[in-house]
Length: 227
Image (tube, rainbow, N blue to C red; front, top):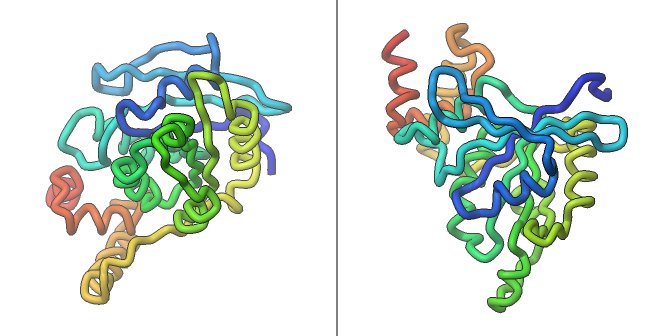
């Protein structure tokens, strides 16, 4: 079913991934700055219309992970948890793919619909890297689209992919899950069940919270000890 209002797309990525360049490529001059609630971190929002739909992009702070050790990390992940955007647009630097997959895996574990813009694909190719886009998409379970944002390459295809994903969210819902081994998986399943059954955490993401709890994430631990 099509949204009669607007779709919210969270633009996520590591610093220097070209995230802001992709954001600017898609939105042009239709941007404005606000602040995230309760903090001084800037919230950059851009809007564009594609076909019959209004798309609002929220440029999340660039982060290397979704732990809660920095303000930027907390802001980015709290937006994803609390706002549950219609789609995550994950910007990945194709020339530093391995390093960028750490954040990608964490985003995927949140279970929200996601697509990947594999940016700076020209730099990757010039360095002699060959990326099997079809295999990468198959392994991650989400669409992967190559872009060169600073040259505007991939703009139209990316807008079409965002449009398709927002209008067919069920088809783009990822089921990616890292297998942590039998022992850990048994513990995670038990934690997931407890979190899902606890009304205090209604609307949260049980699997993601269980993983973060076992990883010793201070903010998630505080949520449990403080309730």
